[in-house]
Image 1 (cartoon, rainbow, N blue to C red):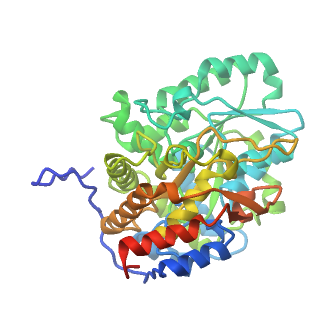
Image 2: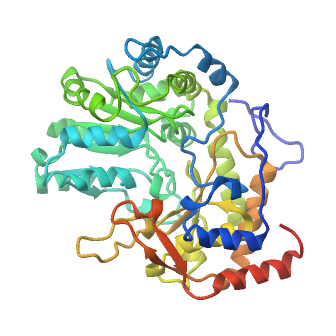
Length: 482
């Protein structure tokens, strides 16, 4: 990796790319932002992108493609069956993960649907370090249950643990002893725990999980959607791997698993996904579900042009200069906010900078969704769209009561190769201003609540007139500034 130091002594992330295509941005006035937030039901998913200045909702499908990816799209073979594009993608996945079989799917949650449909039956239990929203929904809709076995440090906003996404191995062993291996269709490892700050797990911990699964004859599945960040953290934080090339780390990770699925909207910088499979029996078990749910076996619901881009993007995943960019910019943002007193998740993980909404808005009860309120407030304050990762993102309990999240986080995702350092500095400035005026922010309450994945399209209203007061304070402090 390029090692560049500044003569001034400052530690800044340096873009290891140049911008060749640009998209014009617009920043509506603060009064318009208040109106637009309410029209969107105080749900940042329902905002229109034309009204967003910095879109930090997600890194899924919004990363900037490289010039090599763009050019590769021109050679796509759009045959419905027998496409050379599919052959190139399947070969690249085999090269990366050393698995003989590959099934395409249009994104990660589509792969989850195929996995759950193929392996889940009512009463089954799926252990994982931590759940992802769609993963859990696919399992529970089929009558299964999720058991989260992350180490205790993973649920603490700030500590010194370098791998807060690790499995708690004794708890995994205890769960298997309690429910029986026959009730566990597979153990799922998420490389980069999305809902608790993009926190990585170590290679050693993956080896320990694999050893447990091997002893009990349980299938081991990797969600590799956020693998590129996790690879970087393994190289930086795990002494054994410090001098290894990324290629070797991937090899060591891949050989531990029976099935690896991924969203190429994250891993590969394009829009698609797929399932890599070691054994023929597993491939046969899932294969017939691809034409049923996704499309034919050689495209799986993906555009062939995107598939060509994924081939190049997977190669770029092995480039340290490429995969270091996200974590370095996230670390910079989290460090600057921490230095200014803003409560953030530390150490910084992948995917984005995560603000601890529980500490930021400690006057708002969880029943009024502090992370969701903070997301609405930040859009009003700066035209910045983040994503709530807290109680709003949970499913209600069967009796209708809230399942309060262990962490209430506002995720400010860092799409790869998209934002400049000055734009990141702007986001830091607006978060700091909001923190200084945090007592003005109030809670939210549902007015339209879907029964499944409510955070995507539910609508909420502010509790009281706190948003108008926030706009008035913005005008008092910033004058005619946008």
